[in-house]
Image 1 (spheres, rainbow, N blue to C red):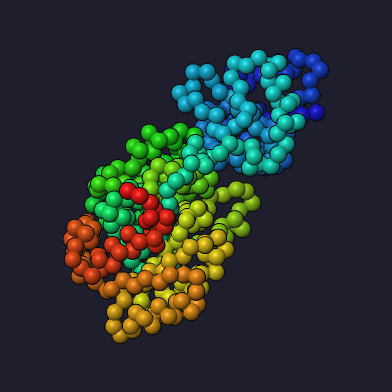
Image 2: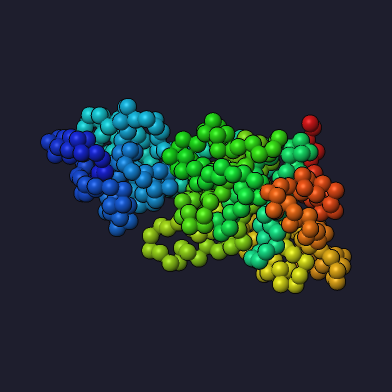
Length: 400
């Protein structure tokens, strides 16, 4: 006997339940009729039901929630023929909401025989661009403290764009988003949240993504951050993973600015699936081709980097570049370089001179160093890094 959990609109629910009750010789029984998505998730988490038949128009349904349901049961979708969003949300089995009961019985009966695979195989690829990624993704990260990570990220992206590389800059710092203000973008919208929400609803196509990436200077597009840190819970891990795939398929270079925290301990605090506080940082680092770690030239920041290096290795970082910011007297840069290389031999180390006047002027003007301090030593150093394989990888050797 197949236990069916049903979550559908009133008329469809009544029709299906009535039809199953009057049909003979079928192995299906309705064990729970759920009023909303929250109840459905609770029922499956309690181990009730073999198959969930759910209306895809139910509020809150998306790839993330369907993936959660699939951990405990098979899922079949119902969709109205006049639905405004004709999306299957990655489900293999979707029936018209007007499907006759005989068809419902056939699909629900067959789904357990044909789809008893692992949950990850139930959902199709997260992005229509999966497998076609041709760009490079670099994550700019740094340990806690004011290391100047966002300043480095925004100016590296600007210099790469000025050198002719189509670049997308993403503000994925869920602790202190700031790139819109640094670029002087007044009409700030939570682009990252909108992109993740669209991906969760399976509506994130090239046209939608392009609308979320305003051009801030020739060759440079910005996906703005969450606006206020309190919105971090709106960024689901599966949506972020799919977003990175789409971005690397749409441009040559993607630079992601993330926050300092890399822990995943939140999983230990909940009995059910919960949002991850640092999902944006962890997801982007695990998807990146290279990680650029920004530290200041002081013992506290360098010690934090050395301690966090083990976590970066756990996340699978293969290509690590260290940028030491604000290098100047009394400690020479060569001594700092030797210290880091002796502890992290696989990393390359690059030094940025201390230039507080140029940085303060650019910050107050909402401008880039290329605009506000074009001849400063700091700007020249950032330009050299932005046009080297550190940032561009194989793109640096690509023609045109």
